[in-house]
Amino acid sequence: MRIFVLTGAGISAESGMGTFRDSGGIWERFDPMKLATPEAFAADPETVQAFYNARRANLRRAEPNRAHEALAHLETGLAAASGSLFLCTQNIDDLHERAGSLHVHHMHGELFKARCTACGAVHDWRDDLGTGDNCAACGTTGRLRPHIVWFGEIPFGLDAIGEALAGADLFVAIGTSGSVYPAAGLVREARMMGLRTCELNLEPSDNADVFDERAYGPASEVVPDFVA
Ligand code: BJW
Image (cartoon, rainbow, N blue to C red; front, side, top):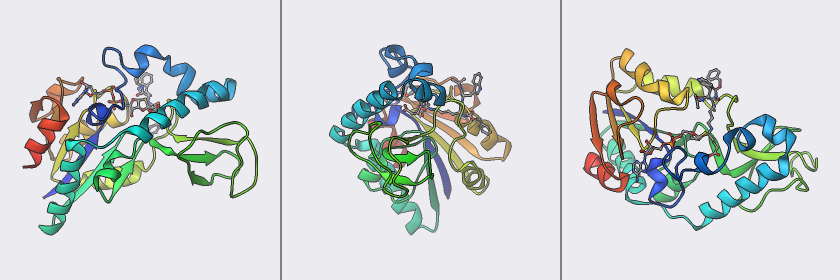
């Protein structure tokens, strides 16, 4: 069995990372157009950096939950049975990796990385990022930005995502509202390619009617049940 899993903010909700569009979610408290666009960063880099510095501090305190652990076990189990797991996450946290997942595709980038807009180098970055920081590759000051895909930017590795989908038997979406493209369109692509599709979420997503199978509840319960 070759499984393509797409995860979203809901899988990390019980780890305290916050979702975007739920009641009290990140985009209810903050305007995404002022924080998560290249235009916002160009206009006010200090405010954007402060937003991501706070999110980075939160991630340093967070721990993976049973849902992340279940997917790490699924990867090992499938590999032992000559199958495979392509774990594609929209999340910028590293909780899949900390739970033991070996291969994680971060289509919207990573909070613990910074990218130099002068030379393109990507650096591990766990602490606060500021306009006075240097790029260790080219030495330029003040050109580092969060290594994150903002609105209007092209998600990372779309070719690899397409190839993995084409080679899979089953598509599973976990903890995502299905409202941000192109990730939200993957379930329809999967169906067109003949994969079976399954949604695991707290409540029906925007795409719920597209899935063949659905199970609803907290990720820490429905994901281990699915993997068992
Ligand atoms: C639980 C749970 C629990 C809760 N257990 N479940 C039409 C109009 C205008 C714009 C567009 C348009 N169509 C497309 C666009 C462009 C735009 C877009 O989609 N906008 C929409 C809002 C309409 N997309 C883009 O700009 C993307 N780029 C792009 O399109 O490039 C052009 C291109 C693409 C391809 C080929 C060629 C050209 C880029 C999108 C970047 C998204 N960036 C963000 C911010 C990242 C950094 C950060 O974190 O700050 O990514 S936005 C935010 O949303 C974040 C997430 O990854 C993403 C998805 O959110 P997610 O994960 O689904 O979270 P929620 O909160 O929405 O849902 C959580 C779910 O969990 C809910 O269902 C809950 O019920 C559930 N849940 N607790 C299980 N315990």
